[in-house]
Structures are given as structure tokens and as C-alpha cells.
Image (cartoon, rainbow over all chains, first blue to last red; front, side, top):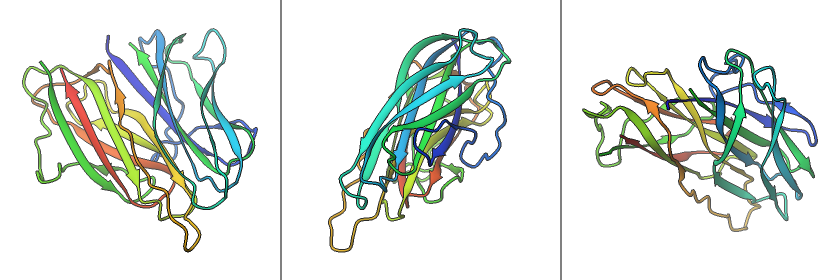
Length: 135
Length: 138
């Protein structure tokens, strides 16, 4: 069945704080992420993060899905973690991960995507999330 | 049967759509969807940065658009990267990309129409980067 891919990204700058992902690179105001017409399920969540590693610390990253497009309520996924010994010279480069799910959705309703740095403050972390809808 | 299209490019500015048109020694590969192909069935993507900009932290976005993509532009997150510049005299860690392989994609395309493949680094600039993208048509 055909699929539709909808993405958002944003940068987390505070620990243990919900940060809504509202942008899409050069699109600074892409608007609400609406469930595509005809979609019944989110079949997968694809997520990636890049951390500047500016703090000698360790933390884990989670993604929260909320909003009226999710009739069963919010969902939360652990997407990864990072840590570094010193605040200079840390480097990370990881491919995105595809998490297979079966989350029912309501077409034309909004899904809000949040990311969060849990544990210790690792610095600034940009998180990108793609929702894979089956239409 | 499947066919492939591979494009590479440099993405040297953050939050800027960079259209990929080259393929290394082949400067202008055809962007026309081959005859008989009806969908993109797989995406392979990789990116690496030189990390010469301090405090870099980005998510890499792949945009698939153009008249060949029947459902409108599709945007897929395929990597995340970042880092800090090392102290003077220290050795820098490498930025090595393992490819992101997305199977069972199923994006409907129109044969004989052209596809536009773009990449963006979204977030805080980590420096210059090189990307390579392969689309598998079926």
C-alpha cells in the first residue's frame, strides 16, 4: 500500500523539557502536521539525533507523539542516548533508526511531535522525526 | 525488476535545500524515472561532516519531489550528526557514516517524469558535509 512520509525537526536546548519539533530545515513554519487523507496507521517512526556534545555528561533521548490525530492517546519512544568524557572533541554521526509500530490515526487531525533530553544535560541536540503513514 | 538512481553532493549550509544533480564522475545522470517503474521501493542514504564548525547538531533530511512523485514531496529523516571542535593539539575523531537503509518504502512515481532529490542539514551547522543517496525503483 502507498505510504506518505511526514517529518519535523527541532533543537533541544534544555534538559528534561518537552521541546516541540515544529520546523523542517529551510521551512521554518511548515504548519501543523496533519494525518494524511485516507491514512489508517502510523506504520513506523523514523528518528535521528545529532548532539553537539558540548557537556561532559550522558543523557537519553525520547520522542513523544501527541494530539488529536492519535485516538488511543500519546505514545513515547526511546530513540537513543549519548555521552562524552570531555566537552571538546566529541563527535557523533548515526543513521536514523526505523521503529516499526502500528499506531491508529485519525485523518485530517494533528499530531504534535516532541523530543526530550532526559538524564543529564548533554548540550544542544537536534532531533528529526519522520512518521510513516500507510494510506 | 528494479532500477537504481544514485546522486551525491556537498551540503555546506545549514537549513538550506541542496538539490543533488551529480554522481561523481558522471556530472548529469538522468533524473527521469525509468520506463515500467511505478514506485520507489528502497532508499539508501549517508552523510558525513568535517565537524569544523563548533557546536554542530543537525538532523539530515531527504526530500523527494518533482513531477514524478505522485503523492507530493516526501521528507524523510535519515541521519543525525554533530560535535565539538577539538582543543588545539588534540586529535580529532572521525565522522563515519553507516548508510541508512529504508526498506518497503512504496512512494508512487510516474515513469518518464523527473524526480528532484534534495538534502538538508537542519539544526546547528557542523561544517561541510558530503552526502550520497540511492533510490531503488520497482
